[in-house]
Image (cartoon, rainbow, N blue to C red):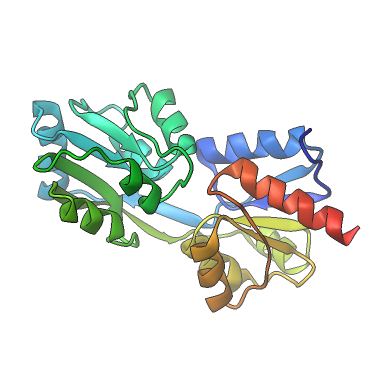
Length: 242
């Protein structure tokens, strides 16, 4: 049985993820509050143009997709390569965009998990399109396996402007909980100074560490990097407090 939620849950991303998360929160009895904390801007220039042309021409064996923002970037592109997604949420977003997915980690939804299931085929050509803030661990890991990796910054991530009313609501504790899906989200949230009464739910250990470095107190941590696991962790934390 799915555990129920209490109160208002702040969701830090909009778009397809925000819609899906809002539906999940409602289904569990909570009230979603979508306040995008990050803004992504596609990068333009010859490197992106070459990546797009290469995908269309079949110059890559794989396209690696690690976020929904990357899906937005390649939406409408001619993708003539196998596609690897970092987790089921990203895979679902790809399929919604009409892009078939060939590889998804079975359990650990992260760069580590993708490396664990990566086929042993040295020499394959891999295109990674990522945020300017993303770590190079996945590209480095693929290169160590003998892949020829084109590691391309596809979009830049910055803090999104938050309206005065929403910012005041965060400071005043309108949210009973907030889902923190990355270190970037944690840093943007910390700038809004949520009160201790707002339960911070982290998507995993790395994000927990980054949230704490940003000055946040993490009240719950997901057992795996999925939305459902974050909501399970929140429900358990709320049950423990009640």
